[in-house]
Amino acid sequence: MQSSRIFIMGSGVVGTATGEGFLAAGHDVTFIDIAPERVRELRKRGLDVRTEIDLTGEPDSLIFLTLPTPNDGHRYDLSAFTAGTAAVGRAIAAAPAHHTVVVRSTVPPGTTESLVRTVLEEQSGRTVGEGFGLASNPEFLRAVSAAEDFAHPWMTVIASRDPQTVERLRTLLSPFGGELRTFADPAEAEFVKCAHNIYNATKISFWNEMWLVAQKLGVDLDPIAATVARSAEGSINPQYGIRGGAPYGGVCLPKDTCGFLGFADTIGVDMPLLSAVVETNDRLAAIVSDEVDTATHAADADQLRARAMAGTHRQQHGPA
Ligand SMILES: NC(=O)c1ccc[n+]([C@@H]2O[C@H](COP(=O)([O-])OP(=O)(O)OC[C@H]3O[C@@H](n4cnc5c(N)ncnc54)[C@H](O)[C@@H]3O)[C@@H](O)[C@H]2O)c1
Image (cartoon, rainbow, N blue to C red; front, top):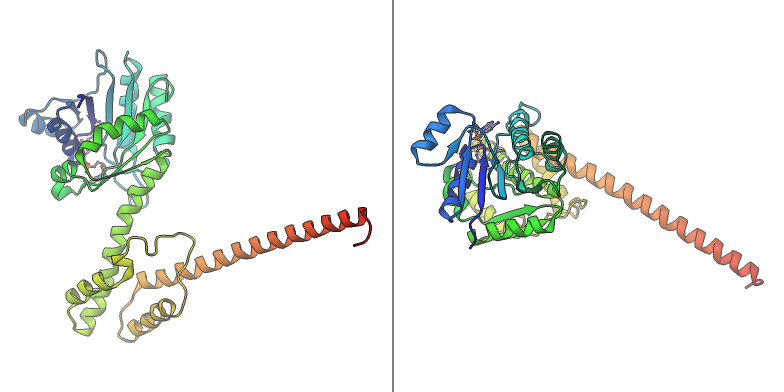
């Protein structure tokens, strides 16, 4: 395997696990961080840590953005992420080689091709493709087992408009194993990571809401949840329920979601998540039926037009 030159921009939980994982795989890694304490800590571990990224005299490299993207209550706070990206752009401006920037932070869909691309182009004076490469490669590791998760990923997602960049990252990351999926649009990879976390959060809140009901009834939720985890198709079948634009229907799901809401009401338990499930399904059913109506009208109009044309055609050739 050929060794790659790698820079880690932002050397916290994800950056350190990423960089140390690449080091262990035989790559040449430099860590960048602006927090003096973090720099001291990582230097004590014998790592090459710097406070600024400098690409002069460096060969072609991969620069992983593992910068923080906290939320400010209602949205992502991308200020530190933007500042770190701008520093990379300035370093690229002075660099003779071709560098590829890989967004590994969790960011809202579209960030790589809007914010990151714009900041890098403005600060470097170069354009994506010719002047530098750009990709998304979101991280799925868990903080509690960061190094282990990086070394043995169960899913790797790579996205870039440039197929050669995708292949370069595939070569770098596939030796770590696990399933590897590629996308051409970085927004899709960014969406995967956001949906991944939101899905996990939703499942956790679902069982916490059920726990409130179980508490009220005086029953133990654990064996119930463990049984449902093995009985519900949504839990055991990865394909179940993942098609968008397809609300649930039939008898049981509408009946039991609404029925249980009423039951919870009678025992004094508020179930905002279950209410939202019912409301979301109702909204989707209305949207889908509007779309079906529109499509049916369009098809009817097409048929009428076709018949009219056929009529004209027939008239031109005499009555049928
Ligand atoms: N922690 C996790 O379990 C986890 C898992 C997957 C993805 N992520 C995502 O990865 C990203 C990083 O998360 P983290 O947990 O490693 O954050 P972190 O706070 O542990 O690390 C971020 C590091 O970036 C440094 N930094 C800030 N501004 C900088 C700049 N301008 N230049 C250089 N360094 C700078 C900080 O000093 C800090 O050490 C986030 O987008 C997060 O959502 C986190």
